Image 1 (tube, one colour):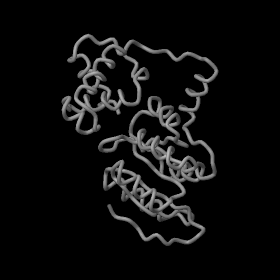
Image 2 (cartoon, rainbow, N blue to C red):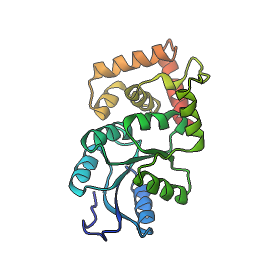
Image 3 (cartoon, rainbow, N blue to C red):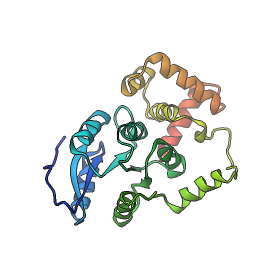
Image 4 (spheres, rainbow, N blue to C red):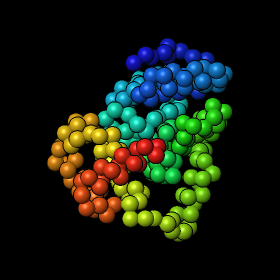
Length: 224
């Protein structure tokens, strides 16, 4: 991956961008370059490259896409926070914030932003997490606060909220048409573990057949 020079004005906040789509990554980098107080010091498109660059470049904030090859952005966030607890992470995604925002916060992220948000909102979110604040949309904040005060959200038998982070990864892969071996290779886990996750997902979502699981997973992916 391309790495930018390590020297920037001392007044600039150093940003690392982790995004596996080159066009989106370049767009984010260009947007940061337009800001006097933000400088991109490194880019990565996967889990391990991101950890290497973060370790070498010591950024002030990391922008992380959820959808990455191998371990996803939620897993990457957990690893970043275990290594550098004080480093703020802002998660970006096309995936529904009502399903992923709370997971991102539990993983240690300082905020969650949909990619459909405006450039101005993105820059505002970056600056807020740099100030030590949490950034969420009003919709996500309301859901999380409702959970904290014990207001039960209405769920159906197929609520994806019941899945663990790893089960949700497997569920997304199923919806992309990947078979068990392909999922195991992508997530770097055993075929047996993938099969166990599939059974857990079916049980939690009240699904009887593998075809039902595939149909629901495809439907979920198409809605994102």
